[in-house]
Image 1 (cartoon, one colour):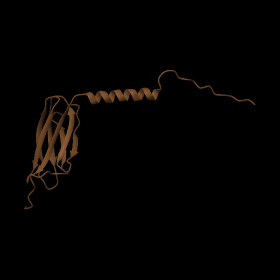
Image 2 (cartoon, one colour):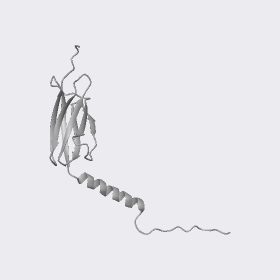
Image 3 (spheres, rainbow, N blue to C red):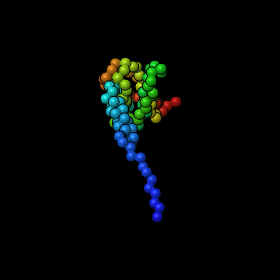
Image 4 (cartoon, rainbow, N blue to C red):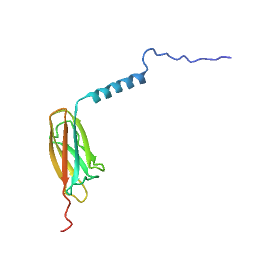
Length: 128
C-alpha cells in the first residue's frame, strides 16, 4: 500500500477573510462617525392635512460637488428625511404628488445641524 498524503501549507498569521472583514468594519465605523446634517420635513395638502405618498427629491445646487441626488417618498404622516455631509452646501427640495401642483424650496446647510422643512402642495383645479 502506497498512500500519499498531500502536504498542506499552514498559514501563520491572520486569516485573509478576517482581515478583509476587519478593514471593512473599520471603514464602516469611520463613515458612521463622520459628521452629517439632517434635512427633515413634512408635506401637507392645502387643506392642512398631511400628504402621504408624495415624491421628494433633494438636489445639490452646485452639480460639481461629489453629492448625488437623493429621493424619498413621504410616509402616511407626510414625513421625509435626508442625511447629507456636514459641509456648507445649498440644496433644492422638489416635491410632487398626483393631483397637486409641484413645489420646491431652497435649503442651506452650514455644518452639523438639523434643518426642518414644511411644504404645502396646492390641489390642481378640476376645472379647465
